[in-house]
Amino acid sequence: MRKPIVLGNWKLNGTTAASEALVASILAGLIEWDAVDVGVCPPFILIPQVIHQAAHTNLAVGGQSCSEYVLGAYTGEVSADMLREVGCRYVLVGHSERRALFGETNEMVARKVNIALKSGLTPVLCVGETLEERQSGRMNDVVRGQIQAVLNVVGIRSFERLVIAYEPIWAIGTGLTASPAQAQSMHAMIRGVLSEHDPAVARGVRIQYGGSVKADNAAELFAEPDIDGGLIGGASLKAEDFLIICRAAADSLRFI
Ligand code: 13P
Image 1 (cartoon, protein in one colour):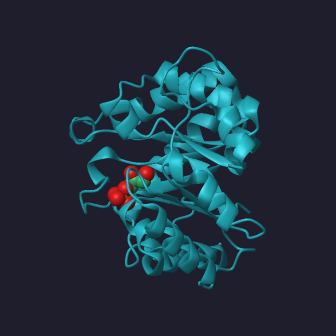
Image 2: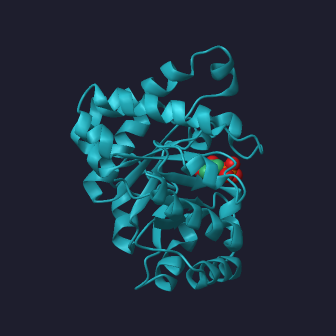
């Protein structure tokens, strides 16, 4: 049985005060911590503050990205080791906004996953297709290619130590959510790709869905057998909504 995982991706949002209030409300809310892993991914500058606030709680913290380099003359970068040292557990890698706006290629993403694993972080490998790729029927090939690029570098056994997030780009921040059937179909496809290499690893890897997950659609998505929680953007900035989504993920275990 895979424990669902819900992560809030705050993206480029949050002030010191807003972050403190949001984390306080999440910690005060009722989450069945045994039934779901929960974390937030603030902008780098807010991470130490959130880690301090969430110390001795079950709320985990992650980075939204990390450098593909370990250290050296790479102005503006933050390394996986640095994130680990301040107490992060997760790091998002290859989010579609990083790929589209900051030129991250499949090969860069694979190097980042490798470096994050080496530092002891759990990478959250983000994959997903554009609307055009879906409409032309190429979505499975695109996502397969994104997974394969990482497999080529880290190997199948490393997938025991990472999380995958399927985020169709056309569903991110648009209010358009993949239907539970569309998401389930892609999640099963991803598990199938991994199963070609190692069925046991494929069965164990957690695959989150992301893209306009809201308080009112989370439960139906998480009820699908291959959807193991969510990567939440906009709705993770409102504690009340984020908590409803976390509870929906915890409840989804009961349907299995
Ligand atoms: P939204 O939930 O705002 O669509 O964002 C999804 C996302 O990109 C999470 O990483």
